Amino acid sequence: MAALVSLTTMTRMVEEERIQIGTLKALGYRRITIMSKYMIYCGAATVIGCIIGLLAGFSGLPRVIAMAFSSQYALPPLITEIHPEYALLSCILEIVCTLGATWAACRHTLNEKSAQLMIPRAPKAGKRILLERIGFFWNRLSFSYKSTLRNVFRYKKHLFMTVLGVAGCTALMVAGFGIQDSLTKLVKTQYDDIIRYDMRIELSESGSDYIAGSGSDSGSAAILDDFLDEHDHLSVMSRSMDLSGSENKEIISSTIYVPDDPSKMKSFVSLHERRSGEPVAFRDDSVVISEKMAEVLEARPGDKITLTDPDGVSADFELTGTTENYSGCYVYIAPDVYADGFEVPEYNGYLLRSGITDQDTQESITEDLLESEYISATEFTSQSREIYETILDSLTFLVYVLVAFSGMLAAVVLYNLTNININERTRELATLRVLGYHNKEVAAYIFREIAILSVLGTILGLALGKLLHYYIVIVAESTDMVFGRELDISTYLISALFTLIFSALVDLIMSRKLRRIDMAASMKAVD
Image (cartoon, rainbow, N blue to C red; front, side, top):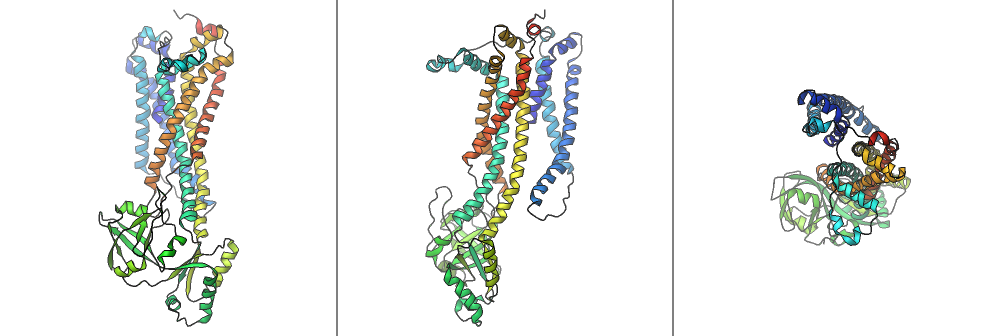
């Protein structure tokens, strides 16, 4: 995008100074001498921009991000420093792109003869376009719309540069809003659709006595008995194990869940495929893992996977299915299958569907339950969900920053291209004014083309934005943190709307330039 902005800016500057360039060339100045004026100008501007960009990137932007998250978290003092290798690489790329674009713009102009440069550029010849062959469509258009469509395809350089510039702006917006969508998808799907329990109780080391029914403290047992009797629950064994596959050497630290009743598993955890939504059966012989884990291990149903406990004891299992999951690395194993590989599971916790949503009530119940010696910890899923929602709130500010920079990019590209378009067609526009066209009609003649190109660029940008978002998600996610990959329709609509609004604002600014065209000066002969 830096090359595109530089190309549009320098093309505009070179076009405005055609007569001066032609005069210098006629006086015998060498091409490199003439070109150096623009190369030095662009190079100096690029160096200044790099300095400002480095300060913003290494100091300003991190402070903005820290400020966004400090409102929700207690963060340590921010330490910012410049990394020479990253700074040098980014500056070299920036300078190469901008100077390369400037060289291309100057070279194209300097290839013309001096006599040609010292007179205004002749308008491009019109050509028949493909739409003219579609009679039922073309014949219903007014003269002004036919002229607009011909001009759109006549100035191909403007077409490609405008479309690419607008597409880049839209793509950045889609990616920004898409990241927000992905985190929203993580929170909503994980805690509304996948995890159906809302509370988890971990038993202490003496909890095995309670499971066996031989509790020594009737008071502690009564606390847990009363609470379990009031709420639907499932006994589980959970422990940490290393998971590996047979296709590669990846080892994933995961949490194993072994329910005492496989038939009740679907009431507490929804096991289903992500793409089709089809439920994954959990029976007495089932071994199900998260989809991302299966992707990393290159494991499919029917393949062998290996679990290794903290003591180094390993066992092989046949994978029966993969399930959609966004937070955490989970392996769900039927008790009989686990017993065949290791030993009879010792259940050390409960998953509950308590229906308790009030935070004060949750804190009160937690305090009451922890009075039992059999309970080591309790956790409501709303607490984990709140962490992600806090991150989502902080991320919103960063999305707005990205949208603002995207809009600035679109404004710069469209402003320069529209300016070039008007400068190249000053005589044509002045002629229309002389023929009796009103200011609004002349403005529509130009801005209708920009609107069409902006719409085409927006459509292309929506597709590129989806690809950019997918790339960011794939790079950012890990085995225990998977982001949603589907974009909400509102993301496309909002991104397109913002892009078109920025385009309209540029048109509004440039309309003043159209009204100031000097008809007499524009139409007089240069000879």
